[in-house]
Length: 250
Image 1: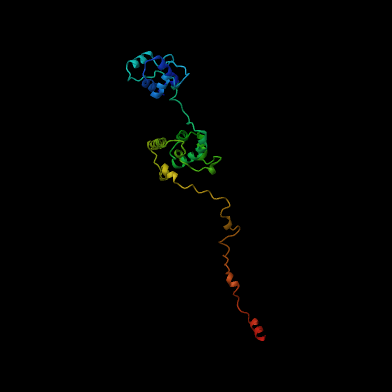
Image 2: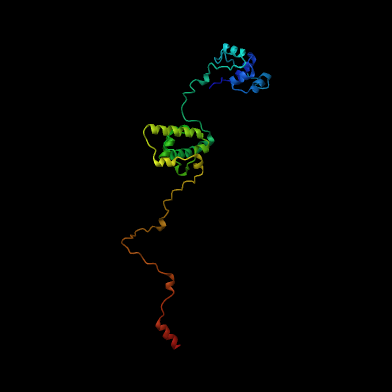
């Protein structure tokens, strides 16, 4: 983070208490030059109290004087309390509520098509927890029968560049450890465009499917196969001689 805290209030203070130009203040505070001009004209940030960057240890008086003497000089931030510990922050990324229901589908896609990714990498990509990933790997997730694999990039849970970087890192680690990717793993590596064009996986047949053709208690090896009777043969019966004699007597 290279911007001061309370940037707009800091800009108000710099406009009121220094001779810095609008560009310098805008670059330092992360504001557009016209927005800084609006602050100077009273059209923007009306009623906002100025925030002294010198008293809050974000700028020094010498740094401001140096910038005032050179209109092309950009101010350097001295200290930003909001940035303390920022680089050490760990944990899964935040996922909007509207997309959290899509995470199991993206996890299943990553597990299926990128088995080289670790649980930690998947957790960072889609913002989930390792127990959830493990339940989908082991197919013990409560809704596993209704989950279809969908590319997390297509769902907007991560960027394609982030996914590619994670895959390259995982493959580099496997190569370093001396592991060779199997043909099955190579086959599963597909691009986003290919995954979006895939047909959905076939459903698992139900438990009663095919029972109509199964005969209980029969053994084809012990019992001879019954001959099928032609229905037409039942109506083409041989002539009876007695019927012919009765017709002659009449």
